[in-house]
Image 1: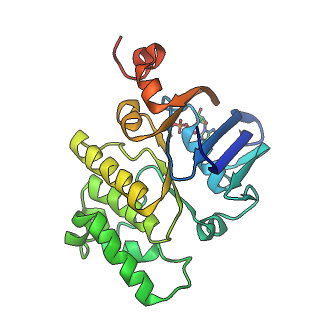
Image 2: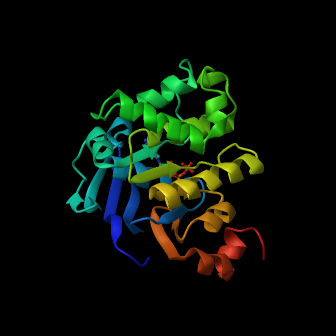
Length: 248
Ligand code: ATP
């Protein structure tokens, strides 16, 4: 994609359990201020790619064995996940990881854990999150585990916003949600992108919606990028139409 990269992944290889080669040389770039979609079927390696960037593979016995990852001007492949968050890159996990027993507002507060700029600033940003997600304001005292799937996804994104990120890695935001709710969430992603300047790398199986909101897309198959291009061009590509958009 055109423009200066905020994130670049250079030819990474990931192995699980010392033997299972899952990423076989993946490279991608997210331009500063871009929304880039990482597409592909279930099992193609999208989640593994995001976790490799966030350095979250160790818990699953996964390891980046080749390649490098750069965020802003630094190599980040050896950083802890928390340090990466402090530098402005945060992942929103698949399955909308909220703390079910905490209220929506308490969940948002947990997102501020890396900040050192004081309560007043945190409180101000929480109001800002509520402005973007009016549904979260309405539900702020509800226990997150009892809110709807869409509200939990919003809570997970809102929680990420509380770390003041410049980049969000968003894993499968559409999963299990009604089309209208998915649309609502992507509209907010677009707003966060245009108004707050947050760059996004979003992993999606829902190619159709992802290519309507993204500027650029990469398509993965079995651990490799097999195609990439401007979102508008991918939408018109015959192979993409046939295999990923469900129209012949
Ligand atoms: P999904 O949409 O289901 O998240 P994905 O494209 O994100 O799919 P990954 O979850 O990254 O795909 O999985 C890629 C491959 O790695 C799959 O074949 C999967 O079985 C394998 N895999 C994932 N996690 C592990 C693990 N902890 N140990 C071994 N293999 C794994």
